[in-house]
Image (cartoon, rainbow, N blue to C red; front, side, top):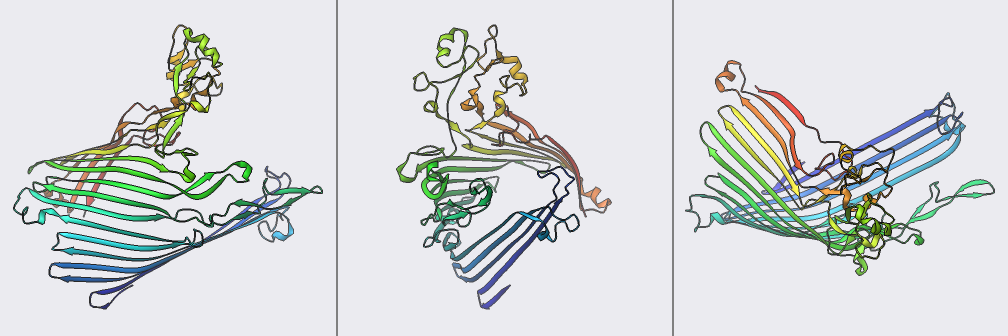
Length: 549
């Protein structure tokens, strides 16, 4: 609902809710093969999920001469509730099945409940002077139930400024300049995407191998503390500075933008590994800091624009450099994270090829023989262990982008769209398909390139090699650089004279091919994913007819 309370002052309220009810009943007859033979089993599950949100704002608009001001203040809140009860009963009645469960023997009863709330207060002001100088200031305060007492609230200011340079007097007479806008902004945002109750000590009382005990021959269920209390747990925060330039020339025949950013994330929410003797595997805490720096470039051109022929081009390029700057307690390493390295760094041993016949004596030192995999002994102590690991790359592209061209000739249109990425490596389990596992498939590439005395190879080991530690090296990673012809489409739009005769506004027929070609050295199923075993990317042929009346 929206109402104008007084001139230029509007009140708006948006409210919504969602309720989901789930019931599941499963009955297994004793004659069916299952976990419990000759026993009727009844499983019943009831669950409910409720979500409600409200957002209320006051907006004030002022237009006076060279000044324009829009100010917004508001409050929003949301609540999420989820409950579930699961029950399993043995020797349930064949007649009542999932009802009247009291006649059977309870196997287990579990119940779960989760609740979280979020409240926010915010103000924002947009000011424009002469439609050339644009200023935005925002302040918001967010309170989340997911964090510890005394740390639930986070305060996030931001501001932005834009200057339409081409509106200045000294550029107004430049005919070829259509747009020149400088933008800059700085702000802080927060992240609360963790589970509920993570700041509190939690007790696990469900039946499991961690809580079951035997007393006098009978099974008894106890309890254990499963999560350590974290009284200082609070928001993960990111402060970011942006600087950008929009431009357009020659009646928008040439346009685009250049953007650069510096994002510093601190109080990172991370599950820190703990010594197992502590009784816990991990603890969720605020640790360390990380920085992302990069730039983005977009260029759009109209290369030709005549009555019968149009050629348009679009190019985008993005580059990102990621680095961990700090970890908790002054540590240089926590798990797979290292200070001074990317959060997606690959830290493993290096693959050195295949031991050759003239290296037999050296290979014996590492319990290998000619034809086996060679792993680089980085510290030269004649032992291959974790101390021989090194930084060999990262799993996320450092750069990526796209390039497209559209041609229009009379009623025909033709579009070619390409994507590209690089500067990273992808895990490929098929890189070491070979004969050391009798049950594994052998690739054609392996068959043609495995090592023999008469055909020495530096790619695949000999038949029957038991030295199969390639998966512990960078030999299972391949360069992920690629260029992919993502889409090619040819279409024809019928002329107006034909449309008029058929009593329609527009008719277009088209055919397209997706994933037509991919240029890459990666030999896995799909170069566009980090999944080691994804469903292969399909080449899709499509055709269609579009009619508008």
